[in-house]
Length: 86
Image (cartoon, rainbow, N blue to C red; front, side, top):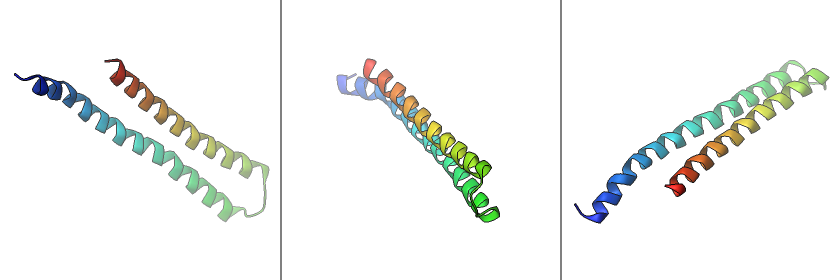
């Protein structure tokens, strides 16, 4: 078996794993943003004037969306670190 074939065979599982990580992260990053947008739209529709609870709800939705993006970036960084360390 040639050296190139061995390298290709050893990196193939990582390519499949990386693709599944990318797909999962895309879904996890988009869903909280959709929920946040839905919350903001519903709150603006129900109560157009400023209210403290409306502000808190919007802030919590923003925090959830940010947290999901940070977690996705962390997972991606761990996967990259494992790939570079191997």
